Image (cartoon, rainbow, N blue to C red; front, side, top):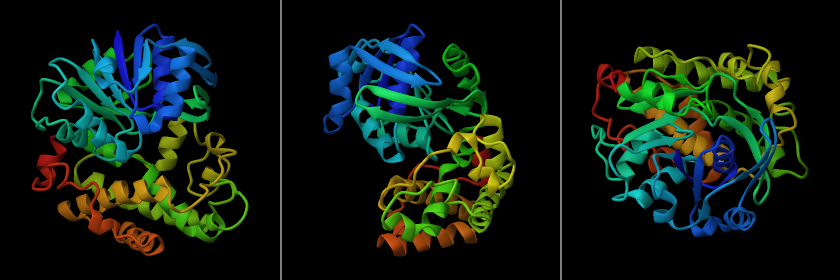
Length: 357
């Protein structure tokens, strides 16, 4: 199969490696401002990986020409942080052709809807299938340009949903050789709400703000999640789960999903994170101005807060974290409204209509 991967960060590089290692013809694209990794892969002709998946995999193309990357593509992966989804959608607007399939991974709260709007596609347009996963399928770091270390490839616990939802099973079959453990979600609202990063990252970051801004590193989960911090994470999680319940959608608690994925060994919000094998050795971010707040508050918690308000579910803990993050970062994340039901085109829908997406 001809596959295009848009996004050459750690996640996109690993998706490209894994697909190529399974015998697919892969073309990797990123914007010119992210050139180092693309240049190294182009020079070597492929990607080196070590860890849970390993080896060298050749790619057909790595560069900044979107038309060349998309040429003949049957499947297109969009891989990157939330703020990259719309630019990738805009980059392919007018170039997608009927029967192509796009997977936004991770969806980061509404990624499939955001991509469709940016690409100029109506939500109800079924000519191009667009899906999203609730998380990236790997715990991975880019160790040097063209080289990734994969700490974990998920064996279970990654959900995928398509627009339209009737195409979910077909897309899962399409990618089953590379991702046999991917599971169907009810719809893209379930994948959006199951996104755990907004539940964990902002709470831990805010409670450890002085340590992050101080001298020296510390371990984000092993040292940053005390039992009291765990209670804050749990409160956010309960509000997220309540939104899903109002919509008739099952949202798994984060420790429960962590157990399924292999990240965690205990179903609790304290030692479950501190002793999680999937989180061992992960250091905290070097500064507060980082995606753990900017993305996970600005795109994640703001989306959940607005969705909760729309369907009549109070989110006092989520709203408090948004306000505290705004004060610390001297930004108005709620006012910026980077990703909301309104921006995704579902702002006027009832709970029942949203549940049927």
